[in-house]
Length: 282
Ligand SMILES: C[S@@+](CC[C@H](N)C(=O)[O-])C[C@H]1O[C@@H](n2cnc3c(N)ncnc32)[C@H](O)[C@@H]1O
Image 1 (cartoon, helix red, strand yellow):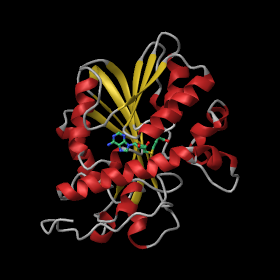
Image 2: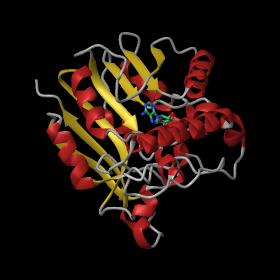
Image 3: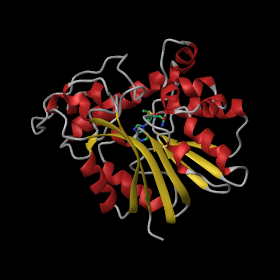
Image 4: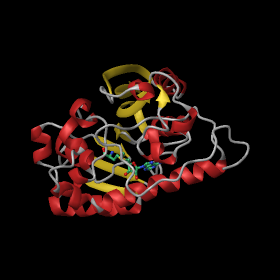
């Protein structure tokens, strides 16, 4: 890492570092990060979630592994999801369960992973609606496409891309959803301005993410393993809300807020699983 970086050297990430599943996810847009570190974090995130995509079937078949879907999704929702999509789940909330997507709407999911939220949204928007999943990890896109083929879902498309530069035209989306992904981005301000760009006037987002009550210790923010767990990059909630306001959203509403690790100690007690809604002005 560069000497210019105040956070110290990134710790190396091992192959079994946790994903944003049972207890993870946070945002770091306010952290000062060098170019070198940024590349390292992105590479680490891609590596980790590529590995998660490859082990999705194994995870799904292992009853001792508690998946994000077990914790956050209803039995009805779980029933319609392919095993491998649940096996790759890494969310910290259930945005589709709250978002109230309407028939005919266009929905875009940022960091779609194995596709769980896209498949649930596809049912809600119906044949007249359309769902787009965006993910930067090629193996996740391949897994999501395989899951879509197995489900026979025709109103969903998965695109390789970055949430900081969303491959979608301006003013074309009714509802943006995301589940524990923006915490993994070093450029959260850019993500929110991209959401603002692609939403139709009056459109909305419903996002679940990891945030914190107070700044995390420097060593946590500098750890690649904590970043891929959606923790190292978790933003302080008040700063996260400011970013949303600065991007031009209105009517921001906290839909759900709960301690991420209720039994934890020290800094881990400050982690929050947050679900928010906000609107692009009409
Ligand atoms: C914690 S998982 C969540 C996946 C899914 N939303 C879910 O709930 O199961 C994070 C996903 O976001 C993707 N991701 C992380 N950072 C990204 C970025 N900057 N741009 C696009 N995708 C990203 C990862 O490849 C991974 O599939």
